[in-house]
Length: 101
Image (cartoon, rainbow, N blue to C red; front, top):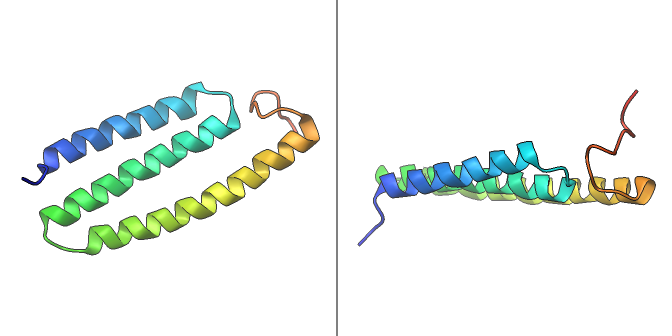
């Protein structure tokens, strides 16, 4: 028995809300990046749910592209976090003022 689209959308909403909460409340840059990944995965679930509802593969294609973008975001984000840690010995975003002009 397939999962009804409403259940997938509610799960996606909850996952997105947890991601937004993590971005807004955490100070650790790695946790913030993980929360952004949660929000992207919630969008992927929406793409796939709507694609299955319309019996089209377009949602799955968009989900694959989103996964590719997320992989690039992780690589660049982790490189920035590592560079900031090497320069400032912290990964807390409140304590990093290196980009301040």
